[in-house]
Every structure is written in C-alpha cells, then in structure tokens.
Image (cartoon, rainbow, N blue to C red):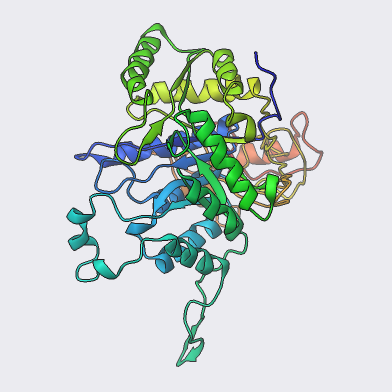
Length: 454
C-alpha cells in the first residue's frame, strides 16, 4: 500500500437526485433521505448536482433548504450551479436565505459559461437579451460581490413605511468564505485562486498539458493554490466515483461491475473538441480503493473529498455504498467522523438540566428533542439547534392546557386528559423511577410509547 499522506479531514458525497418525470416526488424524497442518512453515518458534507431540462435536480438551492430542515450538522453543497442560467443578484438572495436557515452550513459551488444547448434555450431563458448576457468570469465576480455584502444598488433608506437596503438581504457574513468554483481547466483553477474561492475538482478535466488524468488534476490543484492568498491552506475538494463492495450482495457486485465496465472506455483518451478527460471509476473493497487513491497524485494533495455516487442505482445500493464509505473506506483513508451527539439540557416539559450520552429527558427517560445544545467545531464554535422529532408523529401534550397538540394517525387520545393517565402522572410524581431525582414531576405521557416532546 502506498505511503499515505495527511489523514483525510472531510468526507462528503455527491448525488444527482434522479426522478421519474411522471411522478417526481419519490425521487426528491429519496435524495433528501440520502442526505439524512449521510448525517447519521457521520459524513461531513452532502453535495447535489444541478441539471436543467433533465430528470435531475433543477433547483438544488430549494432542495437544500428542505434538507436543512431535516438535518442539523452536515454541510450542504451544490456541485455546481451553472451561472449562465442564473441572475447573480437573485441567486445571492437565495443562497443567503438558505445559509441563514441552515445555520451557516451552505457551501455553494458555481461555474461559468453559456448554458448547454444555448441556441435551443436562448429564446426561453433570455428572450430579446441573450446577446447582451455576459457568461465570463465576471458573472461569478458579481455573485461574489453580492454575497460579500457589497452595495448592489445606489439607493437605501426609508420610503413610506418600507425600509430599503443597498445590499443583498439577508446577509450571511460567513457565506463568502464558503463559495466554491467547479473548474476543469488551468484557467479556471487560477481564476478561482486569485478570487479567494474554494476549488472543486471532479472526475472530469480538460487535457491541456497531458493525457494523464491524475497529472492534469494535480496541475490544477497546484495552480489554484499558487494563486490563492491562503496558499497551501486553500481548500480543495476532489470528487471521484468510488463504489466500495465490502457489504454488497452478489447481485449488487454484478450490477456495479457492469456499470463500471460500461463507463470505462470513455476514460481511455480525451473526448471531443475540448479534449475532456474522465477519471476511471474505482470499484472494489475499501482497502483496494484506498490503495488506488493513495496512488493517485492529485488525491495525495487534498484533505477533503466529495465522492460521487453512481447515477442510476436504487436506494438499497446507495445505502450500502454510503455505509461502506463511512464505516470502511473513510477510516482506511485516516478519516474520523466528528463527535456530534448533542448535550441535552432537559426536555420540553421539564426544567431539569442534565447531560446524557443520548438525547433523552433526564426525568422521564423519554426522547427529548428540544433543549440547548452545544457542539464543538473548529470553525464555527458552539451553536444551538432543535431537530425535528423522530420518529414522528408523536403525542405531545401542552402542560398548561392539557390538550393534545399532535395526534397519532390512529384515534389515540391525549394521555394528559384521561383519568387513567392523570392517576399515573400523580403516582409517577410521588414514586420516583430509578435514576430520576427525588421530587421530580414529569408531566409527559405515562408510557414510553407516547414519547415526551415537551
């Protein structure tokens, strides 16, 4: 096995989010559930591909807004938003809004250039103004200025009862430092470095100086860092396709092997007039993939990855691949999942402050999903959060009104209103359960099945 360099610091994954055009809901839901699974497995980031006029995610910012409400820790990225389809000012507003809603977890990746199939989409996208649109790097620079909070207009002040700002609102101060550029050429790498962006390098590069994929990607990474004010500390994330088979079934291994075999010929030589090169998909055990990665010259230059998931697999396949990446491949590359389980300081219906290894109410031992939470992070410090109750729906009773605010789908009645439950609550208050402080009075439900959400 090649001698490994620095341990992998951040482990992420990239998904496309395919869906059925006649029934798009399930496909979007699967992708959201995939991001939630990634958080549970300890991944540092989840990235979403961007597709227009295809059966993939066309509005990743909206999708990540939904993902932000289902997760609490994992960073959320786009890889990448083609700015030729976007108005930089409007996009800056959307990005800042999602960043605020997510608690500063958004990592927007963008690229420049005219939209694909420009002659076909120009009339629909920019009717009458297509020739005036600027698809150069300046379009990215405009977005960066708006995200950084620089003035967007010349007017600010009060007009009647309304107040106006001259910058994009809301403003998210840390967002500018989390802007990424997805580049496949030396020019893009240098430009991203000169403008203090982060750099996304994927499984596709332009063969400008060599036909060795790893050598070309390595030259891009080094050119980016040479131009970046932070030098060697500038962030780079590599995105290769990896398919670990440690826990795969025989049928899955056969499926994965056929998928890789069908895609391997395209990696033999540069393709098209732009001489685009594709990296080979890496398949095998986590140990074998780790060997291949350590032998990859560009991989040895990075400490962050966003491994790309195959396009057309099923949910069980993705769950197996993500699990093997997190539990086998990541540790083989020196990665360690961050410890993020929260410190719970009491449940919704109790005032007792207690720290436990899992989020449970200190008085009634039922699941508790509200309370001040502290989390260590080298970059953002501590924060507080209130994840959604899980599993849901749950019985939640208001201690003031004794009325049920959320019922199960069955015809369950609120335990706080029933005489039996009232008796139980009285008995529980007078007879402490083991491990509960003497004199505590939990107003939650009497049974564990109706978990405390107050």
